[in-house]
Image (cartoon, rainbow, N blue to C red; front, side, top):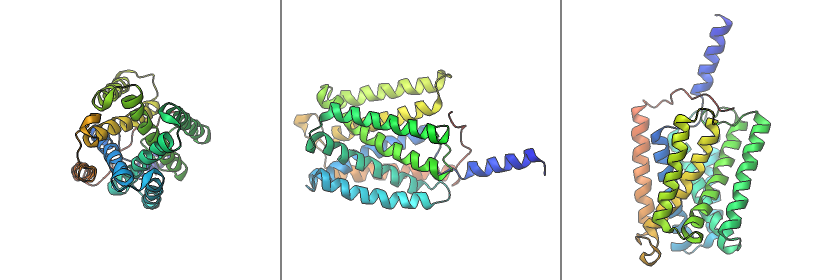
Length: 268
């Protein structure tokens, strides 16, 4: 066996061990569904069941710790484990953001600014420690820690941004959804045509933007009609979206033959 063959074999092995899905169109669809159910599910626990933002955050943090432990201990990508952690980060993000905005009294502007700074700090630290920011090829434990911390903070930021756009700016839920969908389209076009923009930067920009999109979509479903929503039951809406998400993930997993295909090159 030549050195080149051995290196190629090791690279293939590392690729198959990647613990995150490819950033395909289906990935972004499931991500939007996950962020939407995070909004409706978070509101269901804090509002419908009247636990309050602080208690609901603690409950979801326990759920996050359990699902993250399962994900980290897995040796390869497993759809159920991965998306369970994503949902956990969106529910924690919903109740944490609401706690900062309303209970702590920071308001949407300050909480959005602080959380945006937190995302940038995590990404800068990731780049400083690892030399690059991963997004589609998470193999090392170090990168996995940074990956999930970035997701947790970005999903919390996304909730604050969604509320800021809908309430402070006065866009409402429907127009807010359209604005964030348009911003995602801009990122997608940059991904397709702007070759000089680092792919990792575009990925994380899209990841942040899907959260306020999901937040405004979730609020448009469950908020009272007087506030611009459809006044659907939060629990029923959450279970329905969760079921749709599970079907899409299962179909994609079945279509791929239960395997995660080769990862794209990492962004420097």
